[in-house]
Every structure is written in C-alpha cells, then in structure tokens.
Amino acid sequence: MRRRAFAVILVGGMALAACSSVGGSATPEAAAPAWSPAGTWSFSTTAQGMTVGGTITLVQEGGTWGGTIAPDASLGMGSFPIDSAELDGREMRLLANAMGDVLDMVMVFDGDTYEGSWGLGGDGGSMSGRRLN
Image 1 (tube, rainbow, N blue to C red):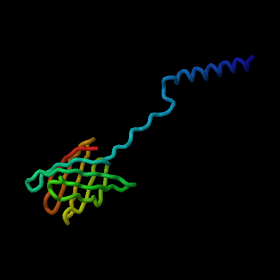
Image 2: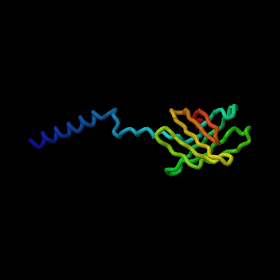
Image 3: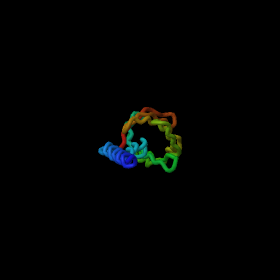
Image 4: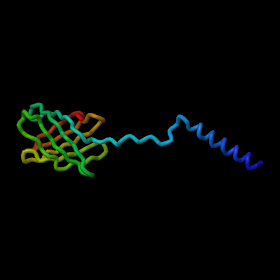
C-alpha cells in the first residue's frame, strides 16, 4: 500500500511539474548577436574647402579587419584598400595608403551611425556617416 501511495504521489508530482512548464520555454532564448561594424558605411567630410563623400566597406576575416575606402567616383580617385584596422569596443582606427600618403581614420560608432576624424598629408577634419548595409 505504501508503494502504491508513493507511486501516486510521484506520478502526480511529475504531472504537476509538467503542467507548470506549459507556456514556458524549455530551452533558453538565444542571445542577441554581438554588434559588428561589418558592412558598408557612408562618409561625409570637408577637405580643402570641398565636401567629399563616399563609402567605407568593413570586412572581418578571422580576427582581422580590412576593407576599402571609396571616395565618390566624381573625384576620380578610385578606392583605397584598408591596410590595417583595429576595433576597440565601438571605436575603430583605420590606416590606408591614399595617393602615396597615409590616410588615418577614426570612427566612433553609435548603432547605425558614426562620427570620427581623418588625417592625410597635413590635412584632416571631422567626418560622419551611417550604415548602408
């Protein structure tokens, strides 16, 4: 008799536990993917009194960042490969060879926009842009 009572209590407890999880998630929710600056970004700045725009494409292969910087085609400059890039939290520093000089850029990201600065051959200034994809 005691065994039967124990079995009834055990089965009843299991049924109660099963019912209490109905509507709940048996598996934990997946964590949101980590933020990444990978993709194409616009940029806008002023250089030598002229408004300059274009795109910056950032790619990550393994743990290494790279990509291209492409000023507007109307400037006739072509694009420049990014020689090195380091991401520290939401700040990225890029170095590229642009027309025989070192282009140094810093981008501070805030979601899908950024503000930053650039320097090239004694010239420089602020820049800003947004994620295009």
